[in-house]
Image (tube, rainbow, N blue to C red; front, side, top):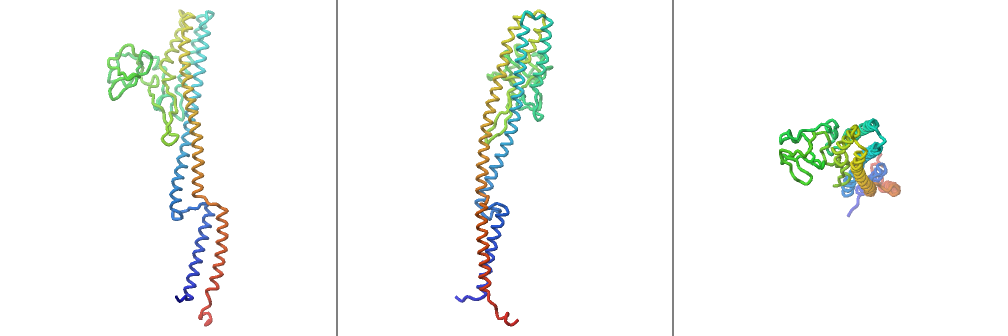
Length: 350
């Protein structure tokens, strides 16, 4: 095959152009720090990069969710701790008042302090975090406790199927019943439905007197994992708690109350105190799990970013060496091209 000057020149220019492209790609990698700057550079690596980036983004969102979880749990734990101290204070005052050395006037003073503590329990039960009530289940827009409604009795005979959902019903043991929309009836914890008319042994309060929502607030902390971040209000701020403390206050104000009558109230206080301790233990257990989830998310973040870096980031030292070598090759190709492209007849005619 005959090789012409024109063919040599064209091949030389083509190779020089290829060298320029390689130099441009290496320079772009150094500028961006990425091996893949567009899908055409490496389609497989680009697709993997999208998946790795989605994983890192998801982990970051879960970590932000954990911040919300800690906010709920820390405030719940703080509120329960304060509740525990108040109930303990009520017990101490009751022990003092149960002494025969206390007269009616002193017991009235004790009753006044316990009444203030009861009001403070209402304030704690209505704690809001980020403008949300944390002790009313998933109903975070309505306050869970209203002492005015608690102290006001509802006539059972006035409740029927038409207005029943406007009230909260409690059985003889103080357990709260749930209104079932589908069957239009109250349902006890054992599943038994209470028909109408409601037996006189039950206690009814206007809706809003005490928390009626038992559904937990769930926050996703990992793929498919949702945690209840709040405490069930019925376990602590129940109707029995405020009613029993109210009865204690009435006994302290009554001149006919004996020391033995007040001593009998200690078991009631201990019962509510144990409820608070149990709920605090439950929150503590949830907090421990959240810490484990946080540690796991931290490991996932490190692994995801490492895989993403290995897939996308350049080895700067290696690229610099390749760029230096390519520059040397490019200079050599220019020198060879200069010797190949010889003068033509037109150069002599000038």
